Image (tube, rainbow, N blue to C red; front, side, top):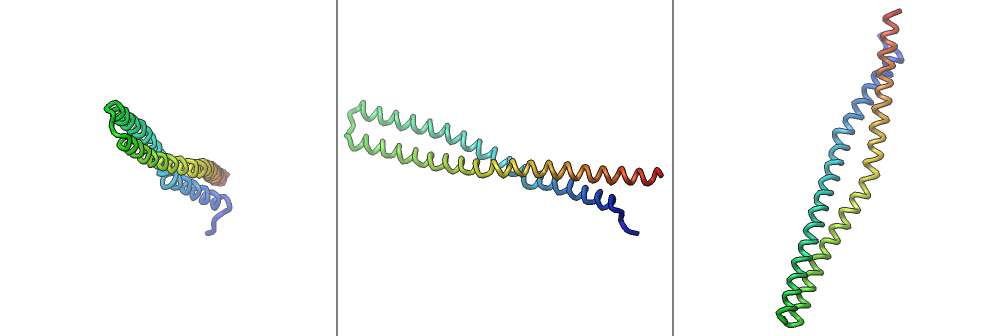
Length: 136
């Protein structure tokens, strides 16, 4: 007993549906979660950056008010710049990752939709042909 063409089409359609679902579950959803986590991290970093800058600005203002030695003020300013520079590097790393993965995510969503649509059409066509064969 051999398979008819429409039965092979139906089988291929089911395989495409499973492939689309697997791609969605095992790659696209984890990628979305990772992007969301990085966005949350970015938001937290931005808040921390503002708070640390405010703390150091207050420390420098206090040192200036107390007429601290100029080298102590310069040391506090250098420390502030050093810490803020680390945040700038992290900001760039996160934004680079986002730009890199955004295109991948969009393309994969289109592939998943295409696979799902083609798989559904093939499986539906196979079922329709099977029903037509049995009704004749």
